[in-house]
Amino acid sequence: MDSASAFAAVALCAVASDGVLAPQEVSALRRALEYRRPYRGMSEHQMGTLVDGLLRQLRDGGAIALVSEAAAALDHNQCLTAFALAADLIHADRSVVPQEKDYLRGLSDSLQLTREETERILTVMDVLYRDVLGCG
Image 1 (spheres, rainbow, N blue to C red):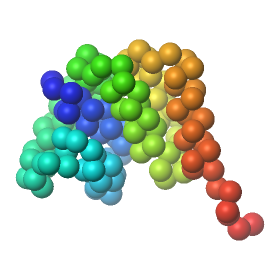
Image 2 (cartoon, rainbow, N blue to C red):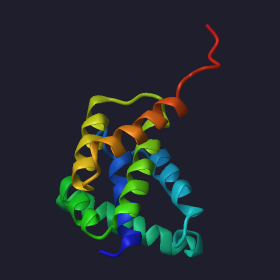
Image 3 (tube, helix red, strand yellow):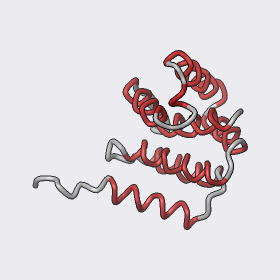
């Protein structure tokens, strides 16, 4: 697996970590990737092929196997950013369910992030998605 596929795989597993992969989540994943290199240079067809292939791997082998393969293809900086993107995608609906928390814990371990790195990223997500302007 190359690093582009690995990075996308981590994000895909994040949006699927609650056990449901809604079409809106796949769209959010694609939007999150499309401004990054090398995805921004991909055609709609190429991006679709990438996501479809990763979905097939996810269905056939499961998230643990896909994340393990992805982790082996990423360097440490890529792992940090992949984890941050996964956390961002999970927090985006402002409702983090236990399966998603479990996924992030396992992902942190698979990517060999330190506890401090993991906590720093998750703290930023909590601040970013805090409802500070809510009425009531």
